[in-house]
Image (cartoon, rainbow, N blue to C red; front, side, top):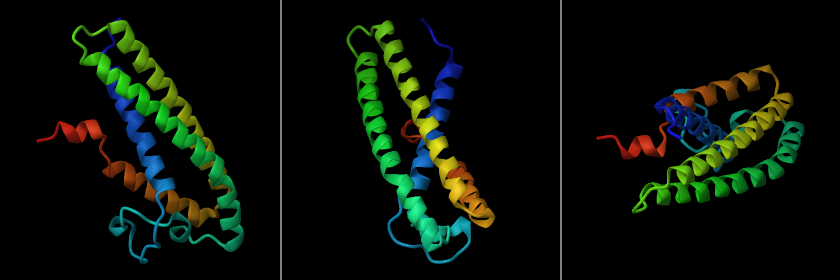
Length: 157
């Protein structure tokens, strides 16, 4: 079955969305200095950036462990299917059915992951006040506007 080119672009866009959300939610080393969003460091402590109260931090931290565990397991499954996909593509005699099966498996895992991320964002949203929601939304939108997929980076001059 020959898939149209737009499905590959849709898959890449979905991956970019997932990566942006993961980066914004998961990576939180040291607290950032208070500066405007365009100058924010790549890695920031999201709880500090959002200025969560102690009660909000407790609620936020209760939401994270299961989400992060599921996300890590999902990424591992996606990586395994990607490796298999690449091996099928570069095999001596590529098997289109096997390629399509791996692509479908990756798409299903990404869809499940995207639903997890959406559920997590909705849960986190319920913890935040209006100003904090705006800060998180602005951060996510800024990150999405800056990101590229690894495949895009590989093919740039």
